[in-house]
Amino acid sequence: SRVFSSAQYLAANIQKAPVHVIPCIAVDQLPVDPPRHVWPGLMGSILPAVWSFQLALRARGLGSTFTTLHLRRGDEAAELLGIPADIMQVGLVPVAYTIGTDFRPAQRPPLEDITHWEQW
Image (tube, rainbow, N blue to C red; front, top):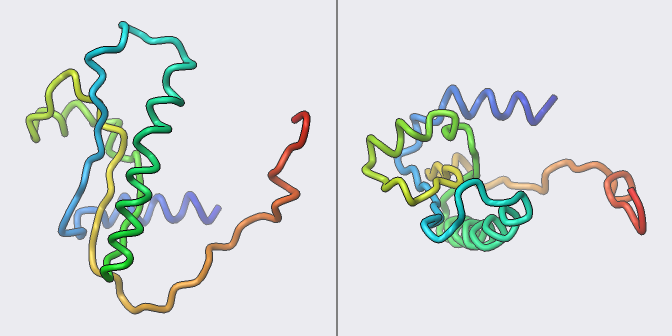
């Protein structure tokens, strides 16, 4: 699929991005193994901030993408960067100048194929 090939390309080329931003959340106030319903609230607080950051980058001629590819080795990243144990990495945003400015909306499935009303 297109998403999988894009992820493979990113994994093979991520080191070329001159800047990597790692959005994080402090989790020191959470219980050990918090219930599943807690996580959407945490992500719901940081992902809009990441999106705003990405829009600001675009306005300045920079490109970025949000990925979680590095999280399988997140402990190594935390050790390398000195990220404390009570801080959770949410993802990684590689940042670079874009090649060209010919951008267009991504191809998406029709809304009626992915929207569910009243039931799944």
